[in-house]
Image (cartoon, rainbow, N blue to C red; front, side, top):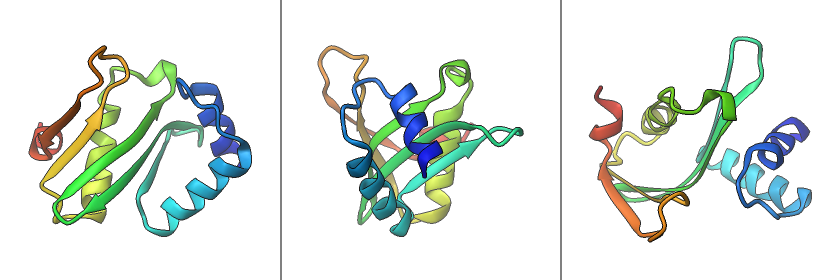
Length: 115
């Protein structure tokens, strides 16, 4: 768990949560299978995502991708992993910090899993 928390602190944009709070969030999301962690071939973390799922919609709470792994299709891999766990999900929603309007975006999951 320390390795995951360290990854979040090193790669997360605005994470100011204590280690204890992060650990609690991660345990809960792992228990509900709403946290995905991707590892590279050396066993190092490439990316982490957390979701909340309600009926046919998954709200992506956060996606943290290691800097050297960005723009390589990692988000698609995370969405595919989540969809394997929750195959009834049709829509995903998320906000992008990089967009100034911070609007919630809604997409059909097919956009990410086909292609």
